[in-house]
Length: 213
Image 1 (cartoon, rainbow, N blue to C red):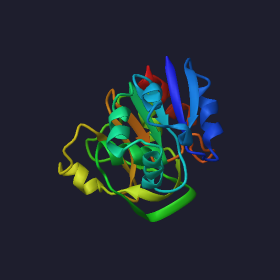
Image 2 (image 1 turned 90 degrees about the vertical axis):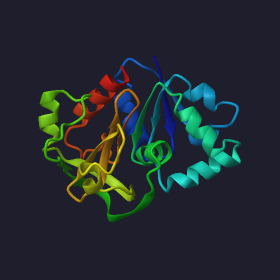
Image 3 (image 1 turned 30 degrees about the vertical axis):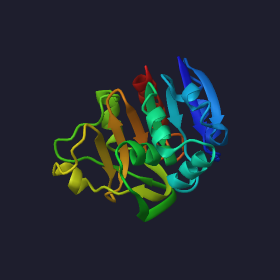
Image 4 (image 1 turned 180 degrees about the vertical axis):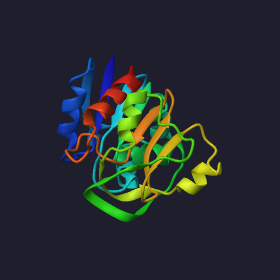
């Protein structure tokens, strides 16, 4: 099974790839600057796709894609043809910005290399790509953030039912979106799962492997 990793020239890319290399995937790394109108279908169509972390706002990259001949509607359409998607940090923002039309805004609590904890709503279960034992670990895990931008949605809107989507969301204790999951479509995380400041690296990457399989 082919896994395409889109590299947004982040300093953590190789650390993330070292985890994916432990799994039984044929991995192809493509620099985002190499994507074009003529090859995007080759990379995305029916493949497992990871949008990695990177600096800046998703719009900066989408504008560069447009300069390369990939219109926003075309990029979104090709992204939806991927077999399954994982997004990390910038990739998390880009997927939800494009597929669920969430706005990317300045975080009220920007963090670079600081750990947060998951805030679980009453009656909320963690995603089914995690085992029951792993969910217990995640409920008290430390997850390392490196972001000054975030997606504009509050846990109040989500838990009250104002957010009408099959997407499941998890927030941190600062009420900022931390993870998103749509069964059989995407798994995204604002934090860095590979970071030494994240206390459950193997659990997170095993869940990604399970999600992709």
